[in-house]
Amino acid sequence: MSSLLYDTPGPRAKRRNVVYTIVFLAVLALVAWWVLGALDDKHQLDADKWSPFVTDSRVWTTYLLPGLTETLRAAALSIVIALPLGAALGIGRLSDHRWVRVSVGAVVEFFRAIPVLLLMMFANSLYREFTTVSSDFRPLYAVVTALVLYNASVIAEVVRAGVLSLPRGQGDAAVALGMRKGQTMLYVLLPQAVTVMLPALVSQLVVIVKDTALGGALLGFAELLSQNRQITANYGANTIATLVVISLIYIAINFALTTLASRLEKRLRRGRKTPSVTLPAQAGATDVTSEAVSGA
Image (cartoon, rainbow, N blue to C red; front, side):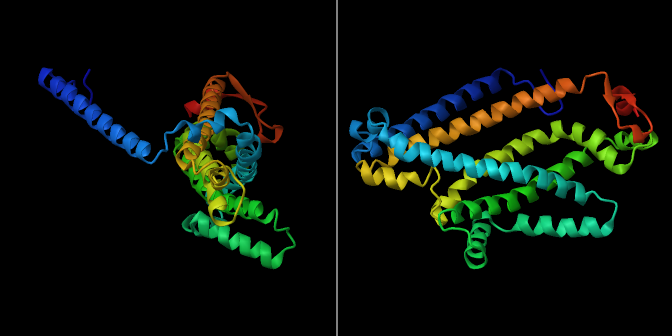
């Protein structure tokens, strides 16, 4: 089936594609064989390197599960704070008031331009010098602060782009119904923009989960990846096995997150097909059909 961007391959193109596929798979198999051979030469595939994750529950109860708990706690706190803060900053960038728009834009661009690692270092130093936060909790505070500041700035741009991607008639229809700008944003624009923004928001949430590992590398935060050092020190330098297991845990977490977001997106799309939406009394109307808003 042809389209503007794709032409149906003919017989010769199909044969070439088959050859390319076979060559690629052969190269991939050779690379995998070389990697496995190198690991075997270093005794990284020996059973004693992998068996502790199956036979010794202490690996999980002492290292992996506590590290996973800290990772999820830091990520959850960062997400809960960054999402509403990012939405508020994104709405601020759309303000009709120049001083609000410029001020919020400066904040967003400032924190979006600084690497998360540097923000963690600054936050940790500030907590150490100017607060009484205990050294036991300081890494967590620094990690969450840095992740919130950076990701809220990125989410603000996602929200702004999502709202601006909507047809101008959406806002015009709401104004014609007597709604104020804040009501238009809250009841008309944002609900429709959520489905547009959701893939980018989910990607950013995945980034938050992974970036908690920076705190372990720099600040001694006892998150999941940092447990690699403890496990390899106590179970015979099984670095490769430990990193593979930790990687699988990260994959499972992020897969669950994206699956949940996909289901939420489907529900939101179904919700947009409902026949009516109730508006506040001061908007000048008590019930307006969504078809009337979207059709303007």
